[in-house]
Image (cartoon, each protein chain N blue to C red):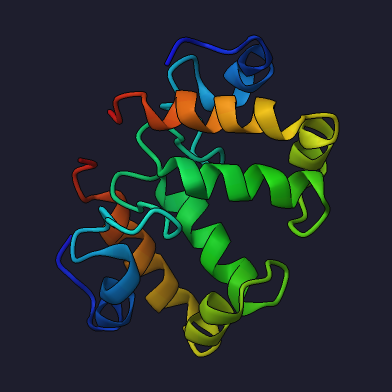
Length: 78
Length: 78
């Protein structure tokens, strides 16, 4: 999957291809799309707490969340 | 790192080497140890909600959490 526009926001912490190099930010590359989708929705809807992630996820639509989840799931885990 | 005794509990959902094949259970293999440690502690201490994970993490010591985090972080992501 090619990189959705909204993924630009994620690059800073999670890395361009989702292989974050900062140990407290999880690697997303190759993670299950369904898990990533659930995590983003939980952050958006307040079921999962993290100030940064809740702020970023707040305005994401279901479609954008799916695209982001599919994008990172399709990246190669390094 | 070799497999800690407590990891037997995780295998059912996350897979022997942490490359879970069930899409709603996250892959742990190759994830940052620090992130895994934080996740387990948050589940143990109730900062992060998930009935299953909270039940499993409830009795883990800091040492056991560190061993589990290091074990899965050292596995090869597939």
